[in-house]
Image 1 (cartoon, rainbow, N blue to C red):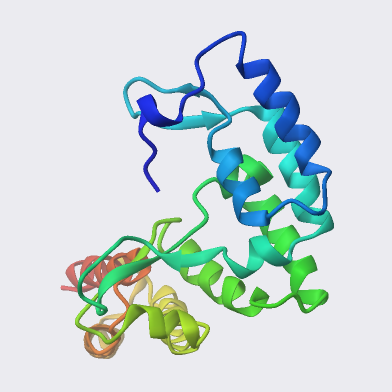
Image 2: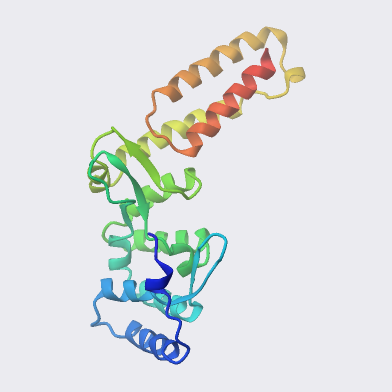
Length: 231
């Protein structure tokens, strides 16, 4: 989600304290529309980093909103996973998430703890968010891109179950590859051929897993490195 500085930053020093106070008051009002409240939070901008144009939201507003989400997580969880962009093609998009989760929760560990609590309480769509989270972590906390692999929205509607199954295959291969020594001197000559055959097999398996995340690329690089060492 990209916000435009001229449209989103509240710059008037006389108006901003009033806006901030009203937002924090509304956070405690259970009758306010959840979508409107979240959109309001996005306008509580403290500053924009000049080089990256990254927006930092106001800390007090973030803390107030977090308290509300922890107490009443349903809306936030239900809408956390979404399409990453507007696209005219249903099979060309990415799976992304609420863009300020890190600022709201502080870091990935605190968010994951919150998510585990939501799963224990069986909050609607918490399983979808958990599945997305596993993919997201394996992709270095970047949206998961898709092209010509079917409707991306349908993948979300099906809780990303198939995608997590592919991730488990990647994890299995990662575990197998890690068992192969990466020190040539520690590998007996008679074992090199077997190791190379296994690495080529794993590489072929990776080619058949259509989940294009950074873990996939890292595994291919690790395999190529070990093959070179075993030459």
